[in-house]
Structures are given as C-alpha cells and as structure tokens.
Image (cartoon, rainbow, N blue to C red; front, top):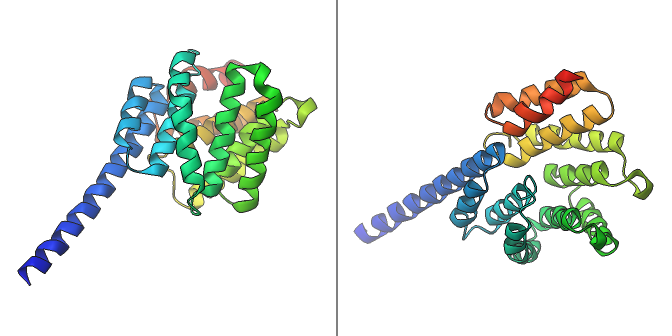
Length: 235
C-alpha cells in the first residue's frame, strides 16, 4: 500500500512538473517573440526538447526571428531539424493539420531568403495549406498561416489582402473562443499580421485597435510599439 501511494504521488508530481515546464516554455517563446530575441528563441528550442509540438513551435519561431536581420546562417542551421520535427508531427493525427500549415510557413521563409526557389516551394506551400485546411478548417493556426500566405503572395499569383484580413479575423476569433491567448506567441503573431492587413487596405482605425489589443497583452511587443503602430499613427 505504501509503495502504491508513493507511486501515485510520484505520478502527480511528474504531471504538475511537466505542465509547469510547458508553461515556462510558452512564456519564454512569448518573450522571445515580442522582444525579437534569437537568444531566447534558442533557449526555448533547448527547453522544449521532448515535446514534439512545443519544439516545432519553438523552431518555427526561431526561423521567423532570423528574418529581422536576415541571419541566413542561423536559418540554415535550424531549417533541416525544423522540417524533420514537422514530418514527425504530421504523423500525429491531433497535430497533422497544424504541422502542415507550419510547414507551409517554413517554405514561405525559404522563398523569402531565396526567391528563385519560388517555382518549387510556392507549389509545395500551397499544397500543404490546402491539405491543412481540409483537415482543420477551424484551426486558428491553420487560418493564420493561410491568411499570411494570402497577404504576402502577389496578387497575380492569387494573393488577396482583403481576404487575408478576413482569415486573420477568423483566426483571432478562434484563438479567443478557445481561450488560447495568454502566453501564446502565435496569437500575438496573428494580431500583428491582422493589423498589417488592415493597414494595407486602409482600415487604419481597426489596425490601431488591434495593435493596442496586442500591447495590452504584451506591453514590450517591440515590433508593434516601435514600428507598426507608429506607421498607422503617422499616417
């Protein structure tokens, strides 16, 4: 009986410890994103090892983080392991759609660094998004990355900033409906992108409201406070 009690206590402690670690990584990823710190992203990558989903998010965040200063060397260092993680994640039914959507986002980053690869990776990116949307049309992450693709794709190739804003709106609504907003860098990422989409279609009042919403959750959100919001206010 004593051994059974000890075993139960051990399991409970492990469960709470795992949850705590997960929360800490989520907080670290949020901090890394809003402060645009590659150092913190690397820490998040290390601390997320052992959790396939969190690790994939951390790796994707790090790849995005390389874009601000075009750190292609760091991007190249992590791109293969990110794609390997996503391949494994795609085999998990609960995460297949989100993994495909993130893969599409990774392909978009590859094209950003090497536009000449667009002929190959443009099709791959679109294909991943189509499959992801078929599997989970109400996934906030799928919708966010679908919107991102619509926003950055040239109009001649199917891009549509108005449609992108609608998809971002749907994504934000679903994040909020599922109460997945605290310590969630993908939610803040979607808010920032929605604001940019609004600004691009001359909905500056809505853009400003979205930026203020993001700053309420993350007052140290550098890109929003120092770049995006001033652009709207200046206009």
